[in-house]
Length: 323
Image (cartoon, rainbow, N blue to C red; front, side, top):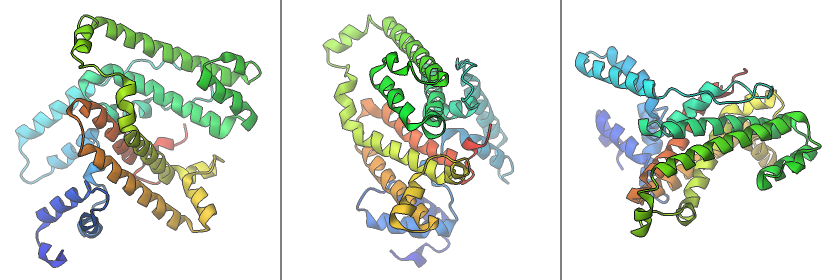
């Protein structure tokens, strides 16, 4: 690859850079292109990691463009406002006496909207927002509030859904479990209700083998789910290690790597970034072999990975500001 051949061809360089973010494992040429083109263009945020709601920023930028089309600008603004109007959420239902729960409702809904932004996923956004809220609460219970001895029965409760394990635990843990069960039951009820509405159609679809059980297709995408989850955790560690260390939180992957390999934080962060890049290559591999019927699932899984970049792209990680 001749680097000098791209001199003065910004459009070609940009297209090559975008293509390099769809690199698969073993494609060394695209890896080299990514290494060279990124610094060349000053690209700080690859297209694969962007998310739809950043269109607001693009609209602002387009306003000041020399050859801005007023009609196109108005259409973009109307489209953005219409989508925003459809993304109103309902009350999460977190109990007021769960005092350890941080106020993260807006941020949680932002995550849910980033994963499933289409208007037809209204219920999914609401359910996912509630799940994210409780993920944050349970994460704080594990990392900050509960002792190791308290976490044993707490974990068993989620594995068996048996509240007998909670009898001797602090009240805040019991409240957390009860609140989570309420949300679980609410989501299950809504799903059953929606399924009842389509029960006239479902038997026929099963008859012609158009309906697949979760157990049948999840093993196929186990590696995808793993790499998306890994990427989210690693992006979290890159963005929150400093803040979590100051508040006495548990060790992150960065601190663990520093201690195990006896290296500096800078080298540990580079290692974590390399792991993120490898995870993206595996995710890209699933995209290139996707089945049409699984496209919604794949899109939302990939959006979750993109959302991690959006939240934690800066080291100060706005998602973890106090309050």
